[in-house]
Length: 187
Image 1 (cartoon, helix red, strand yellow):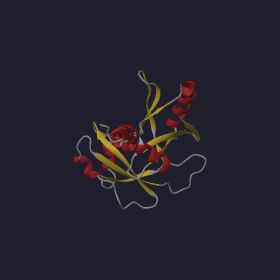
Image 2 (cartoon, one colour):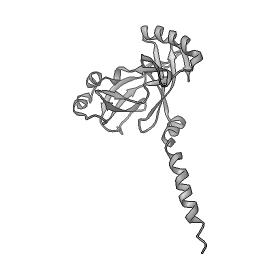
Image 3 (cartoon, one colour):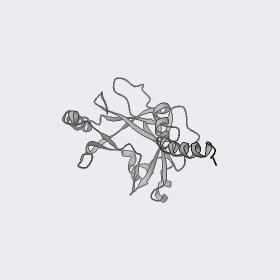
């Protein structure tokens, strides 16, 4: 008795489709996401297990800071692991040589549907009293480590470190490049 071909093809397609679907959302953000710029500061430059990376911190990751924004009072009652959306507005002045960072303007506990044309929602998750967005770490090539480390130190003193981020319609964000004193570093 010969089995129909579809009984072989369908399970095979399912097995191939599942691993391909996992990065699909990230690929959609890269392809169709909107580019924004966020003010940052370096936190910890080295991870022994993963090599040289730049761990970045954001003022809007702090629960106290979020509580000062409109809608931020709701953050007090949020449980660990809950999603939080921070709404950012574009800078008033157009980008010059060095990009101007977007500014956080309000907080929502669900994806907002009333965003203006110059606003975007960034999705984060509450973890240990801080909000994590998935853009907190950038890996740096070993051959550029010393030069970039010196630039990071200078830029952080002058608050001139900016991260270039792609944000999708769902609020998912991917860090694409680091701007230090007007110089773009893409890894």
